[in-house]
Image (cartoon, rainbow, N blue to C red; front, side):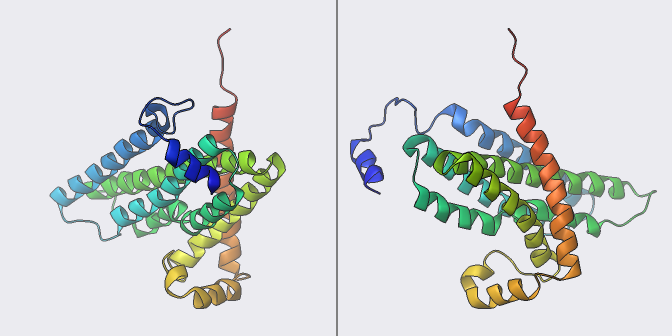
Length: 236
C-alpha cells in the first residue's frame, strides 16, 4: 500500500518507463471491443429479420468482460509495482467469481432450433457461435493475464497450480449458472446460502461432467493460446 501511495504522489502525466498505460497495453481490449461490436451487429441483423433473440446474449457477453477487465487491472498492477501479493489475491478471488461467465455462453447453443430450410436457423447458428467465441476469447485472455500475474507475484510453481485449479472450477461455475441458475452476484447477495449450495452439489454427476469437459475445453484452448504467444517464430 505504501508503494501505491508513493507512486500516486509522484505520478505525473508524462511518459514513464515502463508506462502504466500505453497503446500497446490497451490494444487487446480495443481489439476485443471491436469483435464484441461485431457480435452485436449479428444480433441487430436478427432483429431486422424477425425479432430479438431472447437468450440474454448481450448481457452474457457483457459479463464475460468483467473477468477480462479485472485481469487487465492485475496485469497493469504487476507490471508497475511487481509484487503486491495481497492485492493480487483479492483480485484473483473477484476474477474467479466472474470467470465462468466466459465459457458459459457455449451452453447458449442449446437454444438452437433445427430447421434446415429456414435461413434464420443458419444465421442463429453463426450468431450464437460468434458470441460464444468472443466470450471464450475474453476468458482465455483474462486467464493468460492472471497466469502471468501469479507467476510474477508468487512463483512459477504457484502460478501453474492456480492455473490448473481455476480451469475445472470454471466448468463447475458453468454448472452452477446453467443448471442451478446461480449467478456471480449471488455471492454478494447471499454468501452463506451460495456457499452451502456450492458444497452440497460438488459431487453431482452433471457438475463433475461439466467440470471435467469444460476444463478440457478451456485447457486445450489455453494451451494453444499459450503456445502461440510463448513460442513465436522469430526471423533471424
